[in-house]
Image (cartoon, rainbow, N blue to C red; front, side):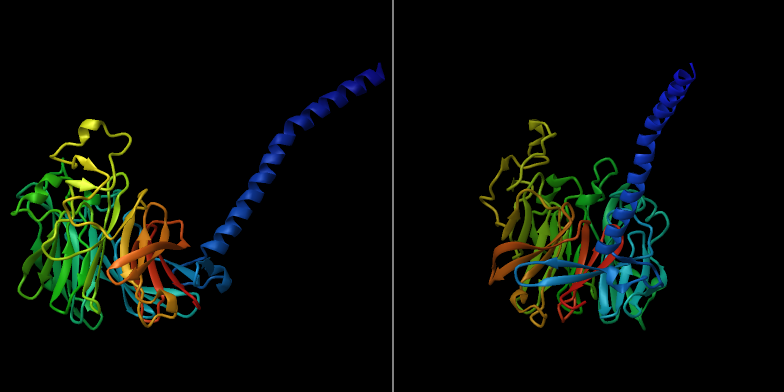
Length: 420
């Protein structure tokens, strides 16, 4: 009888142990996985906290290898709570960066040694009503900015109460002693017409800027979700303009663009490069020439999205002809499938990587990859992935030594170079 009771108790204990094993195992695995992923994240991403050093500067670095160079990367967190898409930035000098947040915050971000940073908030542009919707995903807000010698241009989406619709506007502010004079801002351009809320597509508005000289800048406009207006001469949608910010004039340069999210003017070669989001596939890199039509919404190398019904391809929205660009100016390079093409820049002829000099550096949103586009004259020979960042790359700037700066939609600044 005694042995029988012992055996029963042992059997019960064994059942209890077996019942707890999965729980204990899951806790152990969970903690191990958490530590492992945390260590991996710190090693690969290595974000520095605002105004504070990292525990080990080497942890703030990652390495990306390509055919002709290996890039070391370092990340900094920008102290802005914004959702995608994030706002633009521009280098002031090698250790100082001007940032305009999507919701209008203007700040100078400074690097302080190897592993720390600090920022100075300079104010906020726009009225509360104009920026009210910038906090929602893909909503309106600041689109781009361009710092000149004594002024700063900022493009953003403004709601026109009188016309009950959205416009892309361009403001000019004095820039004195590294301070923006907000009270002296003046509107120098606004898009036509105002697009009703029911039709407006924020991700197809854009407003990229590129400097031509101290008095003129190029400005892109998307179709705002109403591409049938591109062909209207009194509409500014789907077009590229040269804006003279001294006399507030706007000269039409080209048309036929859907969502032109990248722009760079190469003064040395007098070439203007623009990126444009395709529909399902067909992301384009265009070499823009005056007076040309770049196809949208008549033709595209892309196609309808799988979930779109066949009747979506109708003249008042999409073009009917897919998979070619006949009859219109052709892009210099097309990505199929789409990469979520974003900003484009030129690698300087003074850059440290000799094989890259004069080539284009291109960002992507969808696959979070940085590309080098081999340029030979007016042609693009190939696109080489040079860094898989794993985040949406929104903006790019490059200094004279070839250090590549990126800003992601998680408000992270990254510096990439051979000897960072």
